[in-house]
Length: 113
Length: 110
Image (cartoon, rainbow over all chains, first blue to last red; front, side, top):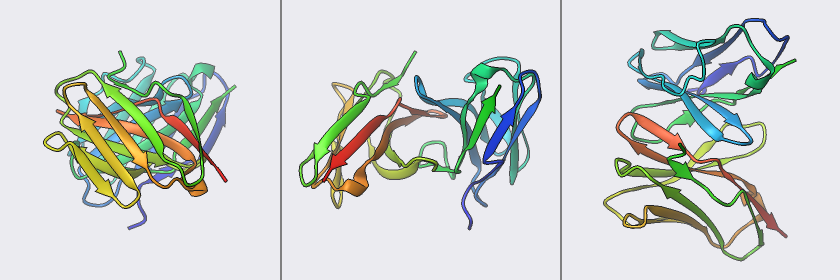
């Protein structure tokens, strides 16, 4: 298995534009997490899916953020409209259970100018 | 409300010596704890874990200690090597969450 695959690796966009980050979890993993890494807060959990269903989205910062998991092999995190303070590295991770080790993708570095 | 705290942003250690990374948590529901290691431009990778029914878990040069009464865990690396230089994240699991600390940058000097 190639591991968790995220795309794009880098995204530079202008303020106000829509941004979509994509994630393909490891096959067979039924838990999927979206995290955001910043210098100040480290790795923040944004949202967690189990069996394609959003279980906890309390970490999603604002209504501008939305996430979907239409099937077991794909998830998206969308920011609309984007703002400069959204600039960060966004990680997707998957696991067989929310209790145990999660495997991370390489992340998407988002820059909003 | 940071449920998992790593109060040391950075740590510098001489090669061959012990590195001790600390982590505190506040939520008593957490019952499984993990350490991750992260190199620049890569995603975090799992390093070692411990269940709340144990107080120590060892894997080669890496040992994690858990003090439940103090809600504190630590990661010991002995001996430290230059390749261990990375960001180390502490994480805690309970219910439906896997919550991470802010990370500690470890620099091992040769």
